Figure (cartoon, helix red, strand yellow):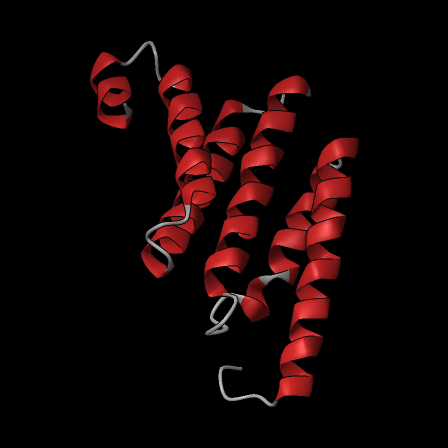
Length: 130
């Protein structure tokens, strides 16, 4: 996608913007299944040269919020932790692609905090996360 024309780049932006809007709505509604589908929907755009850091951020945001919503819905802890791990990977990738991207750093820190909380009974693991 990095070598696409201006019109194609505009379409990619429109497509990602539409998906991001849907992520925000699904998060607000606590719609776990839709959040997972939308994470996958952003996959084709994850390596776009111009959008990669933002797409990776929104993929991370999606899984982070899926986990946070899951805490409210009593989702199994292993599923929550897996979602947070995926979010951490996405936020780290966003930071790699744009080292000054503060929102991705905030998301990363929040995910690690949730994971430390979840591992509070395992002192060494919790300290590693902090």
